[in-house]
Amino acid sequence: MKKKFLNKNYTCVAVSKTKSEKSIKKLYDFGYRHFGENKVQELIIKNKNLPKDIHWHMIGHLQTNKVKMVVPFVYLIHSVDSLKVLSKINKESEKIGKKTNCLIQINISNEESKYGFSINEIKEIIINNDLNNFNSIVIKGLMGMASFSDDKLLIKNEFKNLKNLYDLIKNNFESNNNNIDFDTLSMGMSNDYAIALNEGSNMVRIGSLLFGKRNY
Ligand SMILES: *Cc1c(COP(=O)(O)O)cnc(C)c1O
Image (cartoon, rainbow, N blue to C red):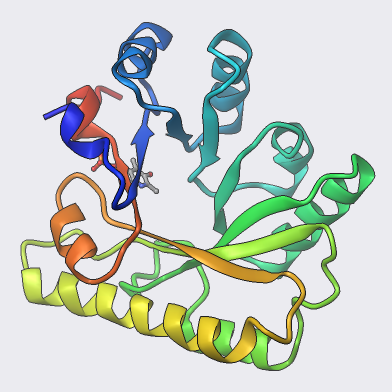
């Protein structure tokens, strides 16, 4: 099971939130190099203590006042859910002369409780060129979480919508935007990764299948 997610067809981000450094090191020794966390404090400590060739992914909601602490070392931020946080990431990246890779989070399940832009909001932002001024970020693609549901068709359709949006932006807006450079579609978790891969995902975020259940 553990080796299954190490392959050349897609990237697996091992979601290590709440899990010990020891258990991360175990997966690292298997060959995993991409790990994801959703809390800044935890991310910082693990980055400090674990091998330096780990690519750290920020996958949880990011508050603007914590951006400064992750920008220096983060590999990819999946959870850009407002222009305010994007602007802050840009500013902090500029200060240290880094270009930070980001994904725009889209609320594909349309649940009020979930973070992310609606599909219409992001289309409007891109059409209006609102991203063009951010010179120290690179938008590498999109991230979305499907509904927490047993309805496979519902999940499939939500992923399909995200893939369509990804293709639309890549095909129509990449060439005239300096900071849009799409190659990453982050969708799929332990319970829906197979559907996501079928719908065109090239990055899955797997927690419990790799680490076991989380105890909060
Ligand atoms: C926790 C989390 C995951 C992993 O969830 P599993 O169901 O344990 O695979 C993936 N993505 C995000 C954004 C998460 O917060």
